[in-house]
Image (cartoon, rainbow over all chains, first blue to last red; front, side, top):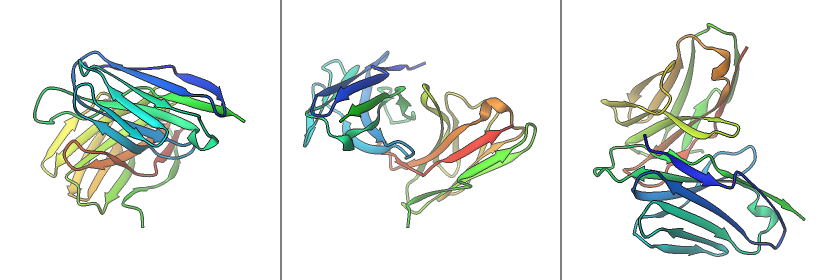
Length: 114
Length: 111
């Protein structure tokens, strides 16, 4: 079955440092989504990438979708304490028709030290 | 009011008991999902439904069943709960393949 690998599992950074999490799929994806889960909370949608090579920005967050549509990354510039949480990527296999559910990566826990 | 609600929010039960987790949504979405979250394992899909007449098994459906009573309601049942089903359970909804909206979660403990 489809697998979505996400690294690193944990990332400790000093406040103000940058952070990147990477996502790799065993199969070509039709799209990829990113979610953030705050401690004790539920996953909240951040963004969806659809096109090969797509890059999208949300303030300090930059999302990329690989040319082969099998990998993606999330980069946060100058982390703040409000960025703490777990970041998940989730992909839909490119089988056409949108007939599959999302497959989530295991997430990257971002821990920020003031 | 929350768009996706789950009941109960917390439940402690004993091995062998039948338990039902309920999910309701007011977003008018066709698609609904059940996930479980375990530390270090991320979110794993249990079942999903693309409309009232459509039910699909996810990655880890063994030991679970679901019912889509209406467009707005999707319930998850554990016929005979076992301790390794202790987890955080999330319901989610979406319209087509767009973003998923998650409920607040149900923390289930099976003793």
